[in-house]
Amino acid sequence: NAGVMQNPRHLVRRRGQEARLRCSPMKGHSHVYWYRQLPEEGLKFMVYLQKENIIDESGMPKERFSAEFPKEGPSILRIQQVVRGDSAAYFCASSAGLNEQFFGPGTRLTVL
Amino acid sequence: QKEVEQDPGPLSVPEGAIVSLNCTYSNSAFQYFMWYRQYSRKGPELLMYTYSSGNKEDGRFTAQVDKSSKYISLFIRDSQPSDSATYLCAMSALGARDDKIIFGKGTRLHILP
Image (cartoon, rainbow over all chains, first blue to last red; front, top):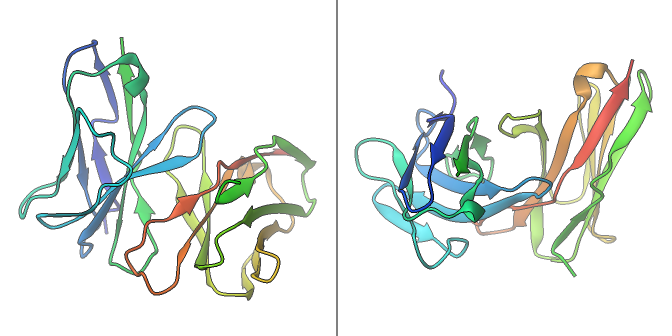
Protein backbone atom coordinates (compact mmCIF):
# COMPACT_ATOMS: atom_id res chain seq x y z
CA ASN A 1 0.00 0.00 0.00
CA ALA A 2 1.70 3.13 -1.21
CA GLY A 3 1.98 6.01 1.21
CA VAL A 4 1.48 9.66 0.45
CA MET A 5 3.34 10.58 -2.71
CA GLN A 6 4.71 13.97 -3.56
CA ASN A 7 6.45 15.22 -6.64
CA PRO A 8 8.76 16.62 -7.55
CA ARG A 9 11.01 15.95 -4.56
CA HIS A 10 13.18 18.92 -5.45
CA LEU A 11 12.15 21.97 -7.41
CA VAL A 12 14.30 24.92 -8.41
CA ARG A 13 12.71 28.09 -9.69
CA ARG A 14 13.92 31.58 -10.46
CA ARG A 15 12.23 34.56 -8.92
CA GLY A 16 8.99 35.36 -10.72
CA GLN A 17 8.36 31.84 -12.02
CA GLU A 18 5.54 29.54 -10.98
CA ALA A 19 5.92 26.47 -8.80
CA ARG A 20 3.50 23.54 -8.91
CA LEU A 21 3.70 20.91 -6.18
CA ARG A 22 1.71 17.69 -6.43
CA CYS A 23 0.39 15.37 -3.77
CA SER A 24 -1.33 12.00 -4.13
CA PRO A 25 -2.95 10.91 -0.84
CA MET A 26 -2.90 7.40 0.55
CA LYS A 27 -5.44 5.04 -0.92
CA GLY A 28 -8.81 5.56 0.75
CA HIS A 29 -7.92 9.01 2.12
CA SER A 30 -10.03 11.93 0.99
CA HIS A 31 -8.54 14.64 3.22
CA VAL A 32 -5.39 16.46 2.18
CA TYR A 33 -3.37 18.99 4.15
CA TRP A 34 -0.45 21.15 3.05
CA TYR A 35 2.25 22.36 5.43
CA ARG A 36 5.36 24.48 5.03
CA GLN A 37 8.53 23.92 7.00
CA LEU A 38 11.29 26.51 7.11
CA PRO A 39 14.78 25.69 8.45
CA GLU A 40 14.75 25.48 12.26
CA GLU A 41 10.99 26.01 12.25
CA GLY A 42 8.09 23.69 12.90
CA LEU A 43 5.46 22.63 10.45
CA LYS A 44 3.07 25.44 9.64
CA PHE A 45 -0.41 24.57 8.45
CA MET A 46 -1.36 26.12 5.13
CA VAL A 47 -4.55 24.58 3.79
CA TYR A 48 -6.94 21.67 4.25
CA LEU A 49 -8.86 20.25 1.32
CA GLN A 50 -11.33 17.53 0.58
CA LYS A 51 -12.25 16.46 -2.92
CA GLU A 52 -13.18 19.58 -4.91
CA ASN A 53 -13.48 21.68 -1.73
CA ILE A 54 -11.23 23.93 0.30
CA ILE A 55 -12.20 23.39 3.93
CA ASP A 56 -9.69 25.65 5.72
CA GLU A 57 -7.18 27.96 4.06
CA SER A 58 -6.42 30.06 7.11
CA GLY A 59 -2.69 29.36 6.82
CA MET A 60 -2.34 30.31 3.18
CA PRO A 61 -0.75 33.63 2.25
CA LYS A 62 -3.40 35.86 0.74
CA GLU A 63 -1.58 36.37 -2.53
CA ARG A 64 0.26 34.14 -5.01
CA PHE A 65 -0.66 30.85 -3.27
CA SER A 66 -3.53 28.58 -4.26
CA ALA A 67 -4.46 24.95 -3.78
CA GLU A 68 -6.86 22.52 -5.32
CA PHE A 69 -7.89 18.90 -4.95
CA PRO A 70 -9.87 17.94 -8.04
CA LYS A 71 -12.25 15.04 -8.33
CA GLU A 72 -9.64 13.16 -10.32
CA GLY A 73 -5.91 13.44 -9.88
CA PRO A 74 -3.57 14.76 -7.24
CA SER A 75 -3.85 17.79 -5.04
CA ILE A 76 -1.84 20.73 -6.33
CA LEU A 77 -0.26 23.58 -4.42
CA ARG A 78 0.52 26.42 -6.78
CA ILE A 79 2.81 29.34 -6.03
CA GLN A 80 2.84 32.13 -8.56
CA GLN A 81 5.67 34.64 -9.01
CA VAL A 82 7.89 32.93 -6.48
CA VAL A 83 10.21 34.96 -4.26
CA ARG A 84 13.26 33.84 -2.29
CA GLY A 85 11.22 33.72 0.90
CA ASP A 86 9.13 30.91 -0.59
CA SER A 87 12.14 28.57 -0.37
CA ALA A 88 11.12 25.85 2.06
CA ALA A 89 10.08 22.24 2.35
CA TYR A 90 6.42 21.74 1.53
CA PHE A 91 4.77 18.68 3.00
CA CYS A 92 1.47 17.13 2.13
CA ALA A 93 -0.42 14.91 4.55
CA SER A 94 -3.54 12.83 4.09
CA SER A 95 -6.07 11.32 6.45
CA ALA A 96 -9.34 9.47 6.49
CA GLY A 97 -10.72 12.25 8.65
CA LEU A 98 -9.70 10.85 12.03
CA ASN A 99 -6.95 13.29 13.01
CA GLU A 100 -4.17 10.86 12.22
CA GLN A 101 -2.33 12.46 9.36
CA PHE A 102 0.24 10.63 7.29
CA PHE A 103 2.90 12.69 5.61
CA GLY A 104 4.58 12.50 2.26
CA PRO A 105 8.35 12.91 1.73
CA GLY A 106 8.00 16.58 0.90
CA THR A 107 9.00 18.86 -1.95
CA ARG A 108 12.01 21.07 -1.37
CA LEU A 109 11.56 24.31 -3.22
CA THR A 110 14.58 26.49 -3.89
CA VAL A 111 14.07 29.94 -5.38
CA LEU A 112 17.15 31.42 -6.98
CA GLN B 1 2.30 32.64 24.57
CA LYS B 2 2.55 30.16 21.73
CA GLU B 3 -0.05 27.43 21.52
CA VAL B 4 2.56 24.68 21.66
CA GLU B 5 6.03 25.02 23.19
CA GLN B 6 8.81 22.52 22.59
CA ASP B 7 12.50 22.83 23.45
CA PRO B 8 14.41 22.62 20.14
CA GLY B 9 17.49 20.99 21.69
CA PRO B 10 19.73 19.51 20.50
CA LEU B 11 19.54 16.78 23.10
CA SER B 12 22.46 14.35 23.17
CA VAL B 13 22.32 11.14 25.19
CA PRO B 14 24.41 7.95 25.22
CA GLU B 15 23.11 4.80 23.59
CA GLY B 16 20.94 2.76 25.93
CA ALA B 17 19.78 5.73 27.99
CA ILE B 18 16.16 6.67 28.59
CA VAL B 19 15.15 9.76 26.62
CA SER B 20 12.47 12.15 27.80
CA LEU B 21 10.94 14.63 25.36
CA ASN B 22 8.15 16.98 26.26
CA CYS B 23 5.84 19.77 25.18
CA THR B 24 3.60 22.24 26.92
CA TYR B 25 0.51 23.82 25.46
CA SER B 26 -1.95 26.57 26.28
CA ASN B 27 -5.20 25.56 24.55
CA SER B 28 -7.32 23.49 26.94
CA ALA B 29 -9.48 22.36 24.01
CA PHE B 30 -6.73 20.07 22.73
CA GLN B 31 -7.72 16.45 23.20
CA TYR B 32 -5.73 14.56 20.58
CA PHE B 33 -1.98 14.34 21.07
CA MET B 34 0.57 12.97 18.67
CA TRP B 35 4.31 12.47 18.35
CA TYR B 36 6.00 12.46 15.00
CA ARG B 37 9.58 11.50 14.17
CA GLN B 38 11.33 13.25 11.31
CA TYR B 39 14.66 12.15 9.92
CA SER B 40 16.79 14.68 8.11
CA ARG B 41 15.30 15.67 4.76
CA LYS B 42 12.37 13.26 5.17
CA GLY B 43 8.68 13.67 5.93
CA PRO B 44 7.36 13.33 9.51
CA GLU B 45 6.36 9.81 10.54
CA LEU B 46 3.53 9.27 13.03
CA LEU B 47 4.90 7.48 16.12
CA MET B 48 2.24 7.74 18.79
CA TYR B 49 -1.35 8.93 18.92
CA THR B 50 -3.25 9.36 22.18
CA TYR B 51 -6.58 10.74 23.18
CA SER B 52 -7.09 12.76 26.39
CA SER B 53 -5.01 12.06 29.50
CA GLY B 54 -3.09 8.94 30.36
CA ASN B 55 -0.29 6.74 29.10
CA LYS B 56 0.18 4.73 25.95
CA GLU B 57 2.99 2.31 25.32
CA ASP B 58 4.27 0.91 22.03
CA GLY B 59 7.49 -1.07 22.19
CA ARG B 60 10.27 1.17 23.45
CA PHE B 61 8.08 4.26 23.24
CA THR B 62 5.70 5.59 25.91
CA ALA B 63 3.53 8.67 25.49
CA GLN B 64 2.10 10.47 28.51
CA VAL B 65 -0.51 13.20 28.60
CA ASP B 66 -1.24 15.32 31.66
CA LYS B 67 -4.10 17.61 30.72
CA SER B 68 -4.26 19.24 34.15
CA SER B 69 -0.73 20.55 33.63
CA LYS B 70 -1.07 20.90 29.84
CA TYR B 71 2.06 18.81 29.48
CA ILE B 72 2.83 15.86 27.24
CA SER B 73 5.87 13.59 27.16
CA LEU B 74 7.46 10.94 25.02
CA PHE B 75 9.84 8.45 26.62
CA ILE B 76 12.22 6.29 24.63
CA ARG B 77 13.74 3.34 26.44
CA ASP B 78 16.98 1.62 25.43
CA SER B 79 17.73 4.41 22.97
CA GLN B 80 19.50 3.47 19.75
CA PRO B 81 21.56 5.54 17.29
CA SER B 82 18.74 4.99 14.79
CA ASP B 83 16.50 7.02 17.12
CA SER B 84 18.53 10.12 16.23
CA ALA B 85 16.00 12.41 14.57
CA THR B 86 13.78 15.42 15.24
CA TYR B 87 10.72 14.65 17.33
CA LEU B 88 7.64 16.81 16.82
CA CYS B 89 4.74 16.95 19.22
CA ALA B 90 1.36 17.78 17.72
CA MET B 91 -2.16 18.25 18.98
CA SER B 92 -5.69 19.11 17.95
CA ALA B 93 -9.05 19.84 19.53
CA LEU B 94 -11.83 17.47 20.53
CA GLY B 95 -14.96 17.21 18.48
CA ALA B 96 -13.46 18.79 15.41
CA ARG B 97 -12.47 15.69 13.54
CA ASP B 98 -11.11 17.70 10.72
CA ASP B 99 -9.50 20.37 12.86
CA LYS B 100 -6.01 21.34 11.88
CA ILE B 101 -3.11 19.98 13.86
CA ILE B 102 -0.77 22.36 15.67
CA PHE B 103 2.85 21.27 15.76
CA GLY B 104 5.68 22.10 18.11
CA LYS B 105 8.93 23.19 16.52
CA GLY B 106 10.56 19.85 17.22
CA THR B 107 13.40 18.61 19.42
CA ARG B 108 16.57 17.38 17.74
CA LEU B 109 17.79 14.20 19.41
CA HIS B 110 21.26 12.68 19.03
CA ILE B 111 21.95 9.21 20.39
CA LEU B 112 25.69 8.78 20.86
CA PRO B 113 27.05 5.27 20.11
